[in-house]
Image 1 (cartoon, rainbow over the protein chains, first blue to last red):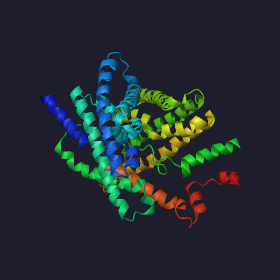
Image 2 (cartoon, rainbow over the protein chains, first blue to last red):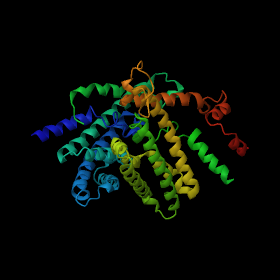
Image 3 (cartoon, each protein chain N blue to C red):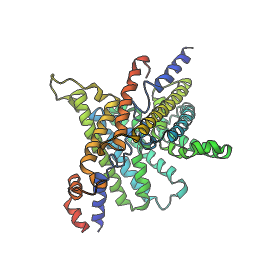
Length: 198
Length: 225
């Protein structure tokens, strides 16, 4: 019971208080590049949630059942990145075969995800904080959802911003996006008192 | 001719085509450690090492890498160098290595390294690629060092762990927390883009003077003409 509660806490913390994008700056590249339209950022957000949840589970299993018993923990970077790349390729193949609609919605985003720092970052944080299997699953899913929330909110703000607003030349593009991200990070810090799990 | 090419690469990467504020690439992994100057120096050293050597390796192997799996091969080369960096940090500076946590591993997914390998090393000889990798790493490192310097100074009133501002200074806690880095980087980009990069948008103004101001290199300007 307590483990379930802890996992729930981890899940909640990963979405709000320890948002992987706004407090750990992971996944910034695609966050800055793809957050111009709500539709594309929803697609990317969904793809990230799915891939992050599955790869954290696979990486947890590989870490504790292969790397730790054979004492080759230092190879974890290579192991994790191979798992992520292979998983993304596999999912792309499966989706392409099974569902055209899903492929049209998510397919183009999947190759982008391999180099998304947030996916690898979630796995690395998970093993460094020594989560159990259940908490690892909760952490992966929560981080994905948190990342998706952040990018979708940013896309909404940027759409509004592009309609009528005078941004100084020096701030156009990345500059104003970073300012908005900073304000969003401030807002998310308001959740910090709700739960204290790192 | 050859030295001109080298100089061109250096000028592009450090000045006019700096990866951070022109292309906004690869800030993911390193921005998180810019709240303390010491950690940033260590992290940037690791990054420059990985960028340079992975570019060199990819360039040496570029004729043998099959086109379809080149991304995978590049990722593995980068990961191998990152493991070296991680092991070295763990052995010689365990305290800092513990503070950096997962961020050393995240150098693998830094877009700059992959971007340089893909865009430059695959089509250029090894020597030039090494220089390109090192300088794009350095061009990235100095931006982050400036950010880290300001964040530590304003956030904790200290530099390199030593307190430099007196008791009268009230720490800006926001600077060492997450939003501080966003604001700092945005301000930095604003200053640089607003002052030095006008020539791309407005054709009027003084384009030559502006670009000379950002990277004063009379030698390469002479070589061009």
